[in-house]
Image 1 (cartoon, helix red, strand yellow):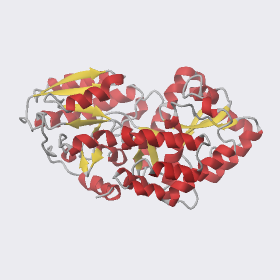
Image 2 (spheres, one colour):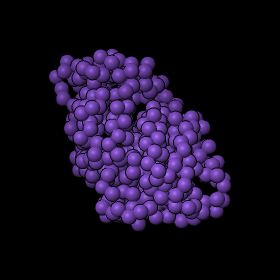
Image 3 (cartoon, rainbow, N blue to C red):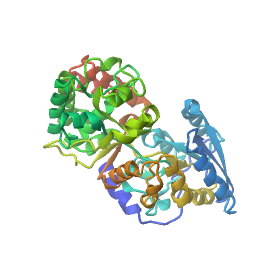
Image 4 (cartoon, rainbow, N blue to C red):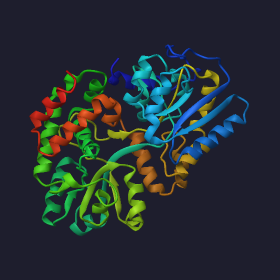
Length: 427
């Protein structure tokens, strides 16, 4: 079953309330354990650890089992998880990014199907990245991180223009801001920032060909890179570069403070295509700008394209997966905390926008309710939410893809060479 039919799968399972079912048993200590007992939860070190710890403490006080939480620094997390999952002492639950990061564990039959835990508690568009081979193996545990356009309200007001709703609007704005000596789009194009260029490719392919094209690629059909929509995307990128949409020196610009963020808040750039975390970046560097002059809108539609204007790309959320070594009933009961009002409110107070259906009523207590509501509505209404390609494909395929994208943006590859270069990654 491909990812297009997977959308039906997720919708159909959304109303189920059955208990956890085991996806399968692998070797090296992955046989299913007893229903109740202690479950060790490995999680990434980040600001939401206090929310997770509160959930663990509350759960442990119920007498329905016990969860211990191990916090692991981000630099070594993936390596430690990979080692642990290959040993006889793998964790019972663990934090992940979903998508390609879970593929190997599913193939090894080390993860539990979580379809029965779904209920109607999560936004449908955020669940796809937690699904591998038609098995829901990741339950959302963090806020959502969609990608959209941020813009400088003052720069726009001074120019007498509005944010783009269509790609034609976007092209016109490039001309307007170029005439004023303002870089239309801040872009981090240095060697370590090709992930920022990926966002442009993701959205243009989605708008031109629809999300199903990438789902086929993710499901293993690498030949789909020869689709006309990919070549058209590469040609549009070249046109943007040649028209000065990103300025002349983007190849040496870094992401964040001192780089793209500063260009935007100082009015040297009018817009930036970035993930929702840009707000926090601006709030940290230029709080007055973030409060008064930072605007945000969805990525524009592309006339004649197959993709719906409401589609979004980015990081739907982060996930908790359950391994076959876990005490199944304990894990099932604990996962219910991820959509409790207390857990959701805790995330919101940290500036997160949860992907639970009960989050909307709690967003009024967010640090910036209007911004939180914008993100929530964007995700709730999205026909499709495609996970960032580098995360979805994993390191083996994602890393060389980023290299080819950077070559295209740097003018080292023509659109045709970009297509052939990406096709050659997986022969």
